[in-house]
Image 1: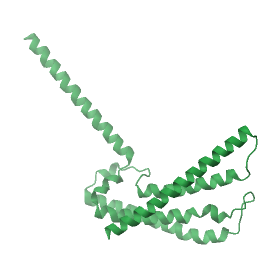
Image 2: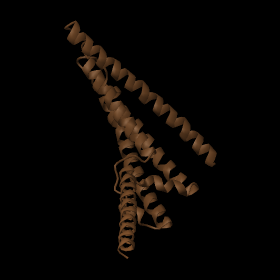
Image 3: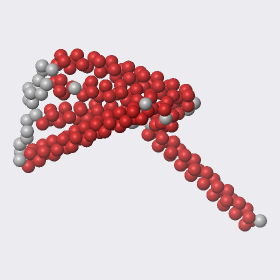
Image 4: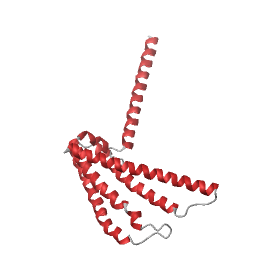
Length: 202
């Protein structure tokens, strides 16, 4: 069961990462093309800005889902880090359940909304508004899957709980540990110098 879920997770992650890579390449090429056309040939392609905005929206939505999977959203984990392991599991589980419920609600409500706007088209590109907004159910559906997966994995691999600490918190802890180590070395140096001075006086 564990291997099956992890295999599905790897496949989904690879697909999301590949799509994000393609989108970023497309955005780069479109922006580069617009810069060259505008500043060298004094012209541009109609609708490029709108397509660029749509692709950027895709990247933002899929990126938000991917960050949830990798637990990289902004968080304050100071309180969480002080909890015992069992309590921490419960708090993290409740957290993902609440996020999952919210994401499922958005996913469910976005489907009929997409159907209602599919006849509306952009006046510049002619693209349906549903195409522009289709990443909403896709991204929030992915978030529901990732919430379920994150809950599942922390009970199978409890060591992954440390990933719930934000990178900023980990960096602060490392800086504090380095500062404490520097203070300890400085105190030891002062004590040695003091002992040497007392030895010289004697």
